[in-house]
Image 1 (cartoon, rainbow, N blue to C red):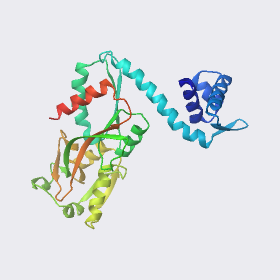
Image 2 (image 1 turned 180 degrees about the vertical axis):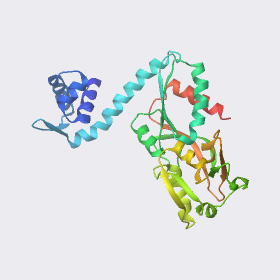
Image 3 (image 1 turned 60 degrees about the horizontal axis):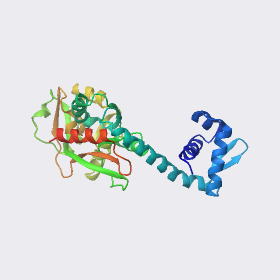
Image 4 (image 1 turned 135 degrees about the vertical axis):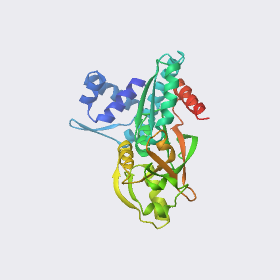
Length: 291
């Protein structure tokens, strides 16, 4: 069994078309078909159902795909390990970030890039669930998020800090004199909230439901910068983690009273994936910068 055969198999599985898979791999269709047939002969079981020009995965093919992907990933990890020995002179770090934690990444990014200017970065903003999806599909090295999920065995969690949930309002409103505010008071105010896909909104909706409160939500929006611009007008208020508006002008955060009204910022990565030297160095710098 050869690594290239596994790669050929996975590409055919992805496209479910031998002709398209061969083109994507820059090989002939006959070569692809021959290599997959040799793999099937070695495994003594067909991996694809061949119906004319159409192919579908067999049950065995579907099960084998998981192990084939793991083998390819391990081989890739080995190659990356060797490259990392080059004193961080090359490499790329892909990081997923929720908007509330952008300032944490920005500070560390500026410091790290000054010390290791040849390392490339890909920064992806999204909701917690969007970032979890990308992490599970090996599109990101690590994500920074506020995420209240049951601990999953294939994830590695590292806590960064906690931040209270807060009513965010314009600095021009009379509410800024309050030291804290209750959920009941918040529910009577005109609110603009992040869309339902944001974990912050899921979190606060559960809190409202627990206290049998019906908030006056008049706007839902999936772009946090635009949401904050609306709040600055003073016509609406919103609910976010206090850290979200760090360094934001014309906005004020009032902590919300009650138990469990804080959220924990964390780093989440995949346990079984080799943590690149550049990623490890960046995360160490990020965590040191928080002390």
